[in-house]
Length: 354
Ligand SMILES: *[C@@H]1O[C@H](CO)[C@@H](O)[C@H](O)[C@H]1NC(C)=O
Ligand SMILES: *[C@@H]1O[C@H](CO)[C@@H](O)[C@H](O)[C@H]1NC(C)=O
Image (cartoon, rainbow, N blue to C red; front, side):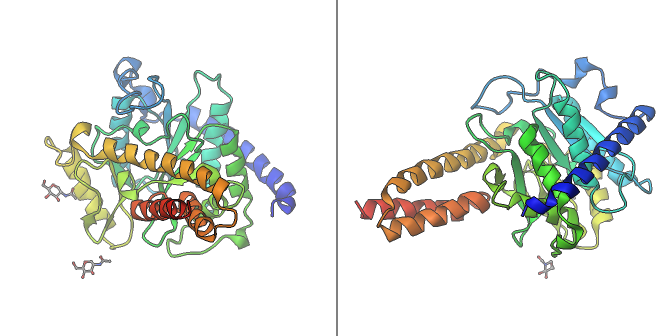
């Protein structure tokens, strides 16, 4: 599958590297209102970091948000980005915004992400971002008090990409996390090399999502990809309802109900008013508990699968249950019910076959 893509891949890499130069140049010529304009002293570098992070090191995790906004001026999108900038200032995140149309098609998202990634990889280790968080310009921060580092994996987890699904089980690219390292670079190279004609078309009509998804799910890359519940930070507002919980971090305004702009206006009015009805201290949200339970399920599942590997020979029930849990661990980690069910089934199979 990857053999024939070599030459094309190199060509695309070249194009991307050239665009990287152009984008960097354009950005240096522009005066954008970004986190870089805010003095370091109030960016809260100390504040960000260990908040809500019970596991792993106490060191701050360096996160950069990446998004794209170009074309006709749109004050609602600008307002949405401003909610991110407040969030960034509070928690010490950087943010980079693509402001130019770099490609006529849908490649802009992975191409820009790749240029930011290459830029980061070119920095010394201690200055380099550890994670990039892609946020679509139609996402806005509802509850400023929830930090992004809450969602990144504990140290022992070898996960590079954290994504979410839509209701039909397709990848939704509104918000996702990508670790800064060479795996991620190889991943994006493969995404950009997906032949245009091969790109799956599905209901979301997002061809860039389809290309990302195709590589995410491929044999080579899927063991470092995981899925978290969408409502944590990519909660949709569909049919005029926010699907997240009280104190939810972000909302993603999809075009589903045809009422996107009015809804966005309402949210912006709310989150910029004196009393933001969505603001809630982290401790009063279910986040910490839910996220810890998520990583615990992953750990427990891996452990029991290891156990099953030693015992599954000649035991069809164990083999079948292990296969099911392995599948869930690859594609359905965002579904707590499925994960628990598959885990319990394997536990039973192991126990009954003793
Ligand atoms: C949207 O809301 C309408 C009316 O409240 C309801 O009839 C319809 O089933 C909802 N659609 C979805 C997809 O939830
Ligand atoms: C805005 O706030 C009002 C009052 O708290 C609430 O009823 C409404 O659902 C909120 N709407 C949005 C879109 O956030």
